[in-house]
Structures are given as C-alpha cells and as structure tokens.
Length: 533
Image 1: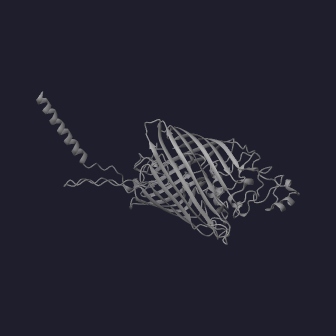
Image 2: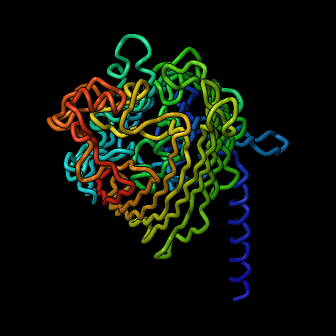
Image 3: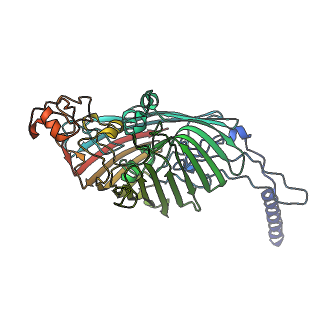
C-alpha cells in the first residue's frame, strides 16, 4: 500500500511540473495583420467574437471602438524573461452592452476581413391620448404620427475596413428621412437641395486608421454625435422617447473628426463640423467641438461633449452658440444568476447659451434678453431573467428661454428653414419662455439579441401650449405651402405674419383666422418592434 501511495505522489508531481511549463510557454501568434485589425469606430455592427472588427459591445456609443495595431506575443527569451503582452483594443476588455445608447448584440452571423454588414428595422404604433384629428405629433424627434403603424427607419449598411482604410454608411429609409432633415435650418443658406441630397443617409463617412498610441482614426463625412447620450437608433436605447436634453440636441454632425486613444480606456475626439446638426453652415462660421470618453472600470462610463464657435441661427450671422453635455452611466448591480440580474442608471446634464445678435447668456442687459439652455435627465434600468426582460423608469426637465433648441411643431408644414423667417403660431423670439418636463416607463421583451418588443408610456408637460391637441395642427384642406404666414379659417394663406393684418386679409374678425390646437400636456403609449443584425 505504501509503495502505491509513493507512486501516485510521484506521478502527481510530474503532472504539476508539466502544467507549470505549459503555463509559462509563449502562446502561438493568432493575430492577423494590421489590415485585418481595423475597426469600425462609430459603428454598432461589430462583434466581440470577430478578429477583423471591433466589438459593438465595446462601446459603439457614445464613442467608438478602434483597434490598436495587431500585436503578437513575443517568444520568451533564452534567459526566461516573460513574453510581451498583446495590446488591448480600446474599450474591448469589458462587456458594454448594458449601456444606454449601446446595442446589445454580441454576435454577427456573417463577417469578413473587408466588410461587416448591419441591418436595422424600427416600426412603431403610437396611441396619443390627445387624439389629434390630423394624427400629427409635434415636439419629438422620435415619434411623429398617432394611431398608425409607421416605419421609423429601415437601415441598411455596414463597415468597410481594409489595409487601414475605413468607411461606413447607413441608410434611413422611412420617417427619419423626412423628420430629421426638417430640423436643419442650414439647408436654407444658398443653393442646391442639401436636405434632398442627404435625407436617406444617417451615416456616411470614410477615413484612415493610424497605428500609433492605442489607435488614431481620422474620418470625414456624416457621423453620429451622441450629444445627449441616447443613440439615434432606438434599438440601442433604454427608452424610445428620450427626454429633451437628448431629443432636442444633435443626432449627427457633418464634418471631420479625429479619434485619439491614448489608453484602452480613454478617448479624445475633436470635431471640425458645419454646425449644430446641419448639412451646411447656416452662416459663415463652422462649428468646433469634441468628446472626451473615459471608462476607468467595467461598470462606469463617463462622457463629456462640448460645442462652440458655430453661428447656427439662419439669417443671424452675429449670433454664436456654446453648449456642454455631460453624462455618467453606472452599473451598480450585476448578478447574472439572479432573477433580477442587473441594474444601472444614467445621468445627463446640459447647459448652453447663445450670445450676440440681440441676445445674451447672462440675462437682460445691453446685450439683449437671456437666451440659454439648462436641462437634465435621469434613467434607471432593471434587467430580469438573464436579460430576457428590461424595465426603465426615467425623465427629465429643461428651461430654454428664447426656444432656440425647442423643436418647432410642424404647424402647416413648418420647418426649421421657414421658422427662421417667421413662425406665427409658435414663436422663437428672444426671451420667449419655454420650460418643460417629462417622465416615462418602458418595458422590453428581448427573446433574442437581435430583436426588442417594446411598450412605453410617456407623459410630457410644457409651461406654454406646445403639444398637438384634438383639433390638430393642420389647416382645413391641408398644408397651404406658406407656413410662415397666418392661415385663414378656410385654409388659405393670409400672406401676413402679424395677426391684425391677417384678420383683415382673411375677411375681418378673429374667427376669420385659423389657429392650431396646442396643449400644455401630452401623454401617449408607444409600441414598437426593433430589429438589428
């Protein structure tokens, strides 16, 4: 018996020695060459299992993931010195699919060294309890029609990446192709139909990846901004209708960005852009800005976006805009085996103002009335049953005297361009007050990583009539083509921007002029099906 015990001890010692040798031996090189190691930065299509593109779960929003140059393990030297470590791709060493504004997809069915495809479909149905007669919803950059099934977006595109050269495009077929361009006043500056030229593209840029530091990307074209934390694509978000500091701030920029990754958890991203969510420059001055993103731990994400210099009010070349947008997201509970398996919150605070051209940042003095923006939003998210279900509760508040960031209601077909000359029913004059708050509760059913079934209830309130009421915001007979003028009760244009002359032009008396039905409160339920491959 003793002999057998000694024999077993000897075999155990040999086995442990072999394991130690194997553990200290250099691993074989599995990395591809640099051209295959390129990443899509602002893309949400990459997979953590892919070696040719960066992970979507590695923070596509609000920043992008860029791969550092491919690195291989160096063989151990003869004197037994340890092998060099492989460089970490920025934001790729943790699972970031819990973030608000980030897609939760982790696998790609088909990918290649040259192209990573992406397909999105977003369809919604809204029951607006104000029951507008024309089914028109105003004051939102996400919801536009009530009591109808509407295609919000059909997105087809993806990321190209080869030999350090990179490009991305994504379509926006559906409601987005009309509703997003109408909020851009810059297309009224000069000739060529820029809104028509770009309306079907949500992203379109090309660039180059430099193998320095932990990666440097230079891109030019149309790219997402992520000011206000939420993604432009609703599939990526905790809620469908975000609060004002997201819905009323830019979804995209057109210009040049440089993404610098000094460490795997830090990004600096300066922008040289045409303006504040604009295809062109509203005047003669470009916008400058940038983003700083920091992820010191796998459970926290800190972002700061800042914008300045731009002259973004059409026909007002001497008016300037500055804005700061700051967010923190924290995952404070993570127990994958529990029924309640995850909890996280996001907090965003914004501040900004305009100055010059008859307005001031600091109140009523010789510079003009105060024209500023203050707002915040707070959301908390719960995940259940291994992320099969999600529940989000949140809301926010803004104060925007001068209304320069308030979304203009589409009364009689009003757009940002026509409102720049005259908006008779909902004015945006210096000093005009606008305070609002909102709240929402969102339930998600997510049977697969590629699809979300969502039900949401929203309540929104403003201190002035703003939301579509039962009478709607469309004149009798439909839009008359002149939203900058008061409409007559028969639907015809009065040709007048002032009420007194409009009454005379329409035949006399207040009853001869048509008015939209605007209310201070709005509540609705929105149901949606969202798909992302």
